Amino acid sequence: MAEALAVVSGQPVKDLYEVGEIPPLGHVPRQMYAWVIRRERHGEPEQSFQVEVVDTPTLDSHDVLVMVMAAGVNYNGIWAGLGLPVSPFDHHKAPYHIAGSDAAGIVWAVGSKVKRWKVGDEVVVHCNQDDGDDEECNGGDPMFSPSQRIWGYETPDGSFCQFTRVQARQIMARPRHLTWEESACYTLVLATAYRMLFGHRPHVLRPGHNVLVWGASGGLGSMAVQLCATAGANAIGVISDETKHDFVMSLGAKGVLNRKDFNCWGQLPKVNGEGFSDYMKEVRKFGKAIWDITGKGTDVDFVFEHPGEQTFPVSCNVVKRGGMVVFCAGTTGFNLTFDARFVWMRQKRIQGSHFANLLQASQANQLVIERRIDPCMSEVFPWEEIPRAHTKMLRNEHKPGNMAVLVQAKRPGRRTVEECLHG
Image (cartoon, rainbow, N blue to C red; front, top):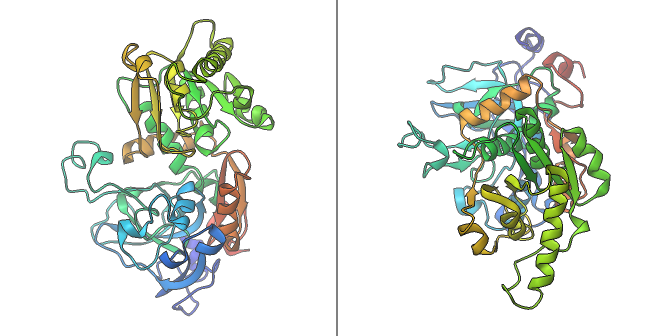
């Protein structure tokens, strides 16, 4: 890679390079192009995301500057643009926000105290940041640190730009068998799913466990199904579109259910009130459909939850005695309801989960390097269509799996810098 970049080393350096134009290795231009969100234009992606020329980030001693070859699309980019449920400017107070919490690229500069990484290394970026100076960061779990924050959402300097500033402990080796865009699309969802299934002892995924996975064809769900298959567990995927059935089965699911075949979604009706009896009949119908896959009387050990309001009462009902409902989001709403009797009397665990620490992210990334997990990239968009990619996700018009966008890699399908330099 260094040899390839030496080809451009004899060229005059510039203060600003066009998107897709690769500077000499290690030359940091004064400015860069970025898709920028500003508070005054909060709204849908086509309104909130605008290309601007901004200063290239400067580094602290433990920071790394990464030239972004490709980036991933996640729902937090939509939230950042909308300013809902909270504006990112309420977190970081910066004058502008660059979204993007997934990236693959090349280490372009390092801080004075960075030892593990050097200029020219090819990396992927995970999105957890912290200050590194409290008990949780030193012997505990950094995800419990009061300083924990998500890069590209709670920080102003995400991946939808030519160069991004990250902490050295955010980067991991890139799987070299993948294209740049494939490398860029999976880390947030895979690491999140990994912590949900392996990070909350004693409820750790083991061979033979049964796991109900909501949204099994999406970015998170597709990772959860594969993790179950890799661990020797049984994923029961839930979809809302029958055309996604075969995709979920191809990931290793034991069975697939279509939630449109049931009518028990939304907030829990008042217990023993109007509609409660009919609601419970549908819940039992859903539970029996799970038994058709797991075996009669065999409830699921885990429910992999992220829709939230529409599905949470059912999740708490169908998980087994002593089992766990683990959730990381509320994409259908945050007002979660459940029948407490089923939880306390059957001693079920309800566990919140948020992204992953470096150890968990690294263990998950290793599964990709070993080709045991596929990134499930469904679509790749050019730089100029970053807002459109987010609009497709907002409208739920995207294909199953994960989306990626190109930044310094001008064309899809490139696996090396050499290929990028030659068009």
